[in-house]
Image (cartoon, rainbow, N blue to C red; front, side, top):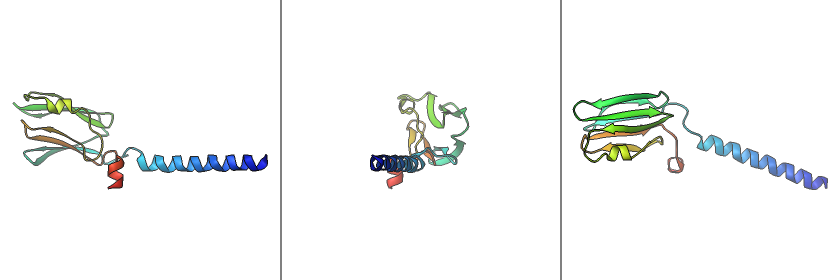
Length: 120
C-alpha cells in the first residue's frame, strides 16, 4: 500500500513540474510587445500593447486602431473593403493587420509566442 502511495505522490510531482515548465514556455509575453504601424513601408508609430488606447491613423484616409487587453484591432476605417476591420484582434508576435487601400500594416512585435514562434 505504501509503495502505491509513493508512486502516486511521485506521479503528482512529475505532473506539477511538467505544468510549471509548460506555463513558463507558453505564457504570454510580459513586456516589450508593440503594435508597429507602417504606411507605405515606412514605420510611422509604435504603440505598446500593455497600454489601452485608441488612435486614428491617417487623415482623409483613416483607420482607427484600438489597443486593449494586450491585443490590437482596427475598429473603424473609411476604406472600401474593410478587410482590416474583419481581421479582428492580433496579439501574437508576427501577426499583422493590413489595409491595402491605405497602404497600412500594423504588425505585432514581441507579443505572445505561439507554438510556431517557439519551434521556429
